[in-house]
Image 1 (cartoon, rainbow, N blue to C red):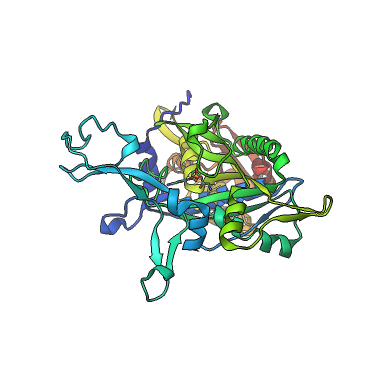
Image 2: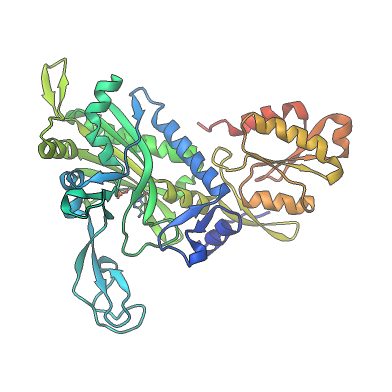
Amino acid sequence: MAAQSSVSLEKIVALCKRRGFVYQSAEIYSGLNGVYDFGPLGAQLRKNIKDAWLNHMTQWAEDVVVMDGSILGSAAVWKASGHLDNFSDPMVDCLSCKKRYRADELELQKPCPSCGNRQWTDVRQFQLMFETNLGALSDNASKAYLRPETAQAIFINIKNVMTSSRVKIPFGIAQIGKAFRNEITPKQFLFRLREFEQMEMEFFCKGEDAASFFDLWIERRQHFYRQIGLSMDRIRMRQHAADELAHYSQACVDVEYEFPFGWKELEGIANRGNFDLSQHSGHSGKDLAVFDEATRESFMPHVVECSVGVDRLFLTLLFDAYYEDEVDGEIRTVLKLSPRMAPVKAAFLPLVKKLNEPMEKLYLHIKKQGYSVLFDDAGSIGKRYRRYDEIGTPACFTFDFESLEDNAVTVRNRDTLQQERIAIDRVQEYLDAMLKTAE
Ligand code: GAP
């Protein structure tokens, strides 16, 4: 059984649709570009990703607390953050076929890749934030923006969090939530979206400690990717050159993954200096400096940020886990997700329908304990195994006629295909051992 990871984006998209991970949003109305809906398995996988991230973020000696900011942000916030002035991409249109491109992704001396003519408009800057108006009036005073990152809600609340939860520098604030960018060319399925979800943690520390916390978080984030089962030979850390740095950043390392379309950013880890808090202090007139009891002096905290998209990590996990191998002369598609990430932990399969009742009893017992499990009696046992391999289910339990005699079931391992017999009252223990986080 020679397993190989041979996957194209098309295969991932087809699997996602077929098995209810991801659907094109508003598909019955011919779709909405750059926006997706998540079906039952997709929603569960997202939940597992977010749980694992939160767990990782909040396990250290330093406090990391969680908050949940608003999606609508006032124009004043985005002015202070620099997004109103800087958050744009260069855009160019083809005058002949009207297709729109990011100018930095094209060679403008060459013809349009779509129609073959060479008639470009001038390059303009395109603001990526979605603008809206609050209330009935559409004047400047009521202008608001859908947040293009979750981070700003953290910065503008630092004082609220510090006074209400007794955390002290150094500490972090973590947040998971939707973000919106009017990307000129959304592409590669979930890789670049117009509506997506971010997991961001802003770690506040003294300026002199920022460089060492930056290094520490780079190390911790690598540990996280190992823990959730990504192949570490497809992960690399790439330091930004000075001319690549975002307007707020002093140093930045991208966690990159080797996608079939090349090495691309999965997560950004940035030393943001004290840019954000200084900006918000200046623009709001509220001093966001922190008083140090030891030195009896105020200082502006520096920030180390870890920021990754739920959707981009979702896509990465699928690429990483997708294998095709040959079992009994047939091609089998299997997602080798780590048990912790797998949307369904185990399937309960009676060998024949006559055995449904005792198997259902065991299934309901396990389900009641809070495990994400499924019962399935449709089709041959081989077909059922394939169905669960394809969605990454690590264990399949089968109840057969012998089970009536020995009170045991067969458990089949998705990756090794090995089967073993275990007592029914040890099924939960088996699942717990399987789910124990790899250290
Ligand atoms: N607060 C910093 C920030 O937002 P970013 O590099 O623009 O930095 C961080 O975004 C992460 O958010 C990216 O590494 C990626 O995982 C995710 N992300 C950004 N734009 C995205 C998009 N259009 N679609 C999906 N994920 C996106």
